Length: 527
Image 1 (spheres, rainbow, N blue to C red):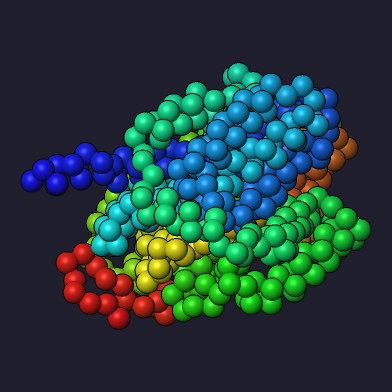
Image 2: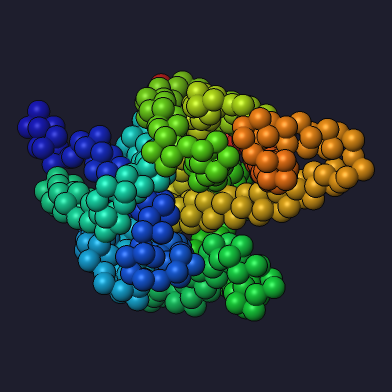
């Protein structure tokens, strides 16, 4: 009895740990999207162009991707708690410094520091939760953590726009200060470091083979260059830019050297061998698809309704909000379902629902109302938790404890890259398909086209009835038709983008069915 009491006093509540990890991760994920809508305010406040200000996003993503490759070693060297606190402290302090930046150079430097701190937090938080819960209850712990992964990207644009409109762009960063300080204090007081972690750290320090600096350099170069290509490609006109060509070559060369080097290492900086396993490899690919769809739709749905439906930034944010509430509530339901049903069936169901939500949006046209988009987003939010939560639990199934940090690093590197791939891919689809549709529609606006002449005459008469003289009314009619062509071209391009996202989601269905059965709560075996 006394032994049990002592154990209860020294063992922290895993739910408390999950809450603290989720709060810290929420801050980090929020900062990947909150700055996007504040770029025009940052540009105006610092006296730079919006293109220059966009490096505020790029530098954060590159630093975020680079540090992920070193987290596994640094965690074993310092301990999870110590490393997590260092990352959270760096993230918090650099966030405050971003808010007080007086020029672009200072802001970019602070964003790099912020990206380094934030990039180390999420994978460690994930592995802490994985080891804090027994395997049968792990999915319930991940349910709380996953809220930050799904809801933060939704809240980010809305919160960033509101803070920039009503306060200042600086508050997009300053808001992290008090939250980060309170979270640090709570972790110091309430989350102990396990004895196993201390023993493992001491063992690492006595090993002859140190940190894989070559592997880290190759992986960091590959991920950093890939982020540059994806994030700056459309802005720089892709391979017409020498900058993008150089970054792409560096990315490819680093990748070709990284794979054979890391495969042969006993303690690689990035254990790419995990990606070749049936269970983890499939989970990694499904996770890529889910986060690519989440972040792409989170960016482009508000863009669509503001551009073609005249919504304000606030109204566009409100359009996303019900979906965030659905995801929050469903996370806890899925956490329970994951203890009763195999992950592969939940993931396949979620992917099918996400595909259905994308199919709904392929029918986009100018007469849609606010609630159409709300319902489509809510349907998407029903499907995503069925993917992200079970895939996280399934990814760790069968992994030895000393591999959880490597697995977390890979999953989070994949999450970052997936978001960039999704946004870059859809940006290009929209840009190129809009040009295609506009060129096809313009072919019909010629004087020999009877339908065009009839429409032109009808609209001209409308403006004449409104008081314009005939010549002026005819020009107004031509301008109106051109505006309709641009709007229709845009809507058709977005429709094409949603078709592509639907196909990506459908591809995750057979992939998820390749996963092995995992041990459920109360079961005695798994296959």
